[in-house]
Amino acid sequence: MTSSSLRRAIAVLMPCVAALGGCGGGTSMPRTQLPVPVTAAQAEARTVPLALRAVGHVEAIASVAIRPRVGGELQKVHFGEGQPVTAGQTLFTIDPRPYQAALREAEARLARDRALLHKAEIDVVRYEDLARRDFVTREQFDQVKASVESLRATVAADIAAVDSARLQLEYCTVTSPVTGRTGTLGVKTGNLVKANDDKAMVTVNQIRPIHVSFAVPAEHLEALRGRAGDGLLVNAHLPDAEGAPETGKLVVVDNTVDVATSTILLKAVFPNEGERLWPGQFVDVELVLEEQQGRLVVPAAAVQTGQKGTYVYVVDPEGKAEQRPVKLARQNGRYAVLDEGVKPGETVVTDGQLRLVPGAKVEVKQGLGASDRGQS
Image (tube, rainbow, N blue to C red; front, side, top):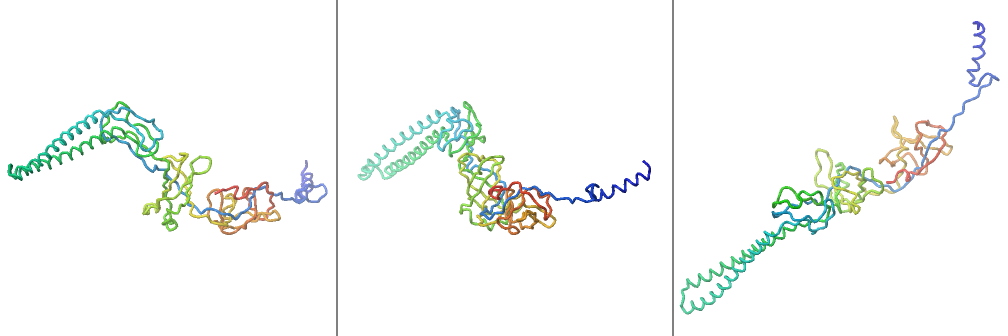
């Protein structure tokens, strides 16, 4: 192609390119903007809880390390490791024979000294009559009376010795002081145990009910002060667990603020009937301070953050997107509570905001209410 032919072809094509519609009739076809597909939901006015959230630590209300009070051979273990036990249930039996013998010996001493006391009391009556008739001296009579008092003290000591021996014999049967669940055994049948050994035979944890302790910022102290007896609701969400959270009540507000972290320790009690909470476990805790009526709620996904603050896209009656600044009160990851910016019943975009500009036409594909997307 010659240079003159090339120039003529360019001259013919330029108007077509400028018109964006080809060069058939010399007329241009305007571009039409397609609606942006989005999902949306309606803003709602409903009752929402005002809650504090923290990470809680599950603790047994009572954790008892069972140690022997007497020494001897461990004859029998009456439970299985990890099994539930009740208060008063027999856990271990220690060889009782040495303590049975000691009890019989103490009872024999008591019987002997009671017999001596009885004779001495008869002697007092006899010597009293003899002393009145001057057949014995007053000194001899006083000595007999002193012997009676001494034997009475001996009998009292013997009674205490019998009680002690009987108690030592009772200690051969080790029972659970609380209702709970046992851990692993620290000693096996046939081994010798010694009194007050440092090593526990087993540990029993009371887990029904159970405590959950958690710390909240000290700025909430005024709202919590003196409210431990009000029955404030506490929810414990187990990690990766399905279903409803465990529900308990606040029972303790600590009397000291931790100066290192500026937090205050709280403690809640849970019935834990299903034993879902386990000592040593970490859970997400939600303390409900109050139920707020008529608060404006939208799905959390509807709230966006820009250079000028938080905003939402509202779909107007004509199906166009309106960027509306909002004042966010709080958000828990599932729903957002707004102080202003949106009215109940207005439709807000929950997905597809990145493709929107103010005034853009939208096509709502589906919608969920705020209550459906974020139950408290």
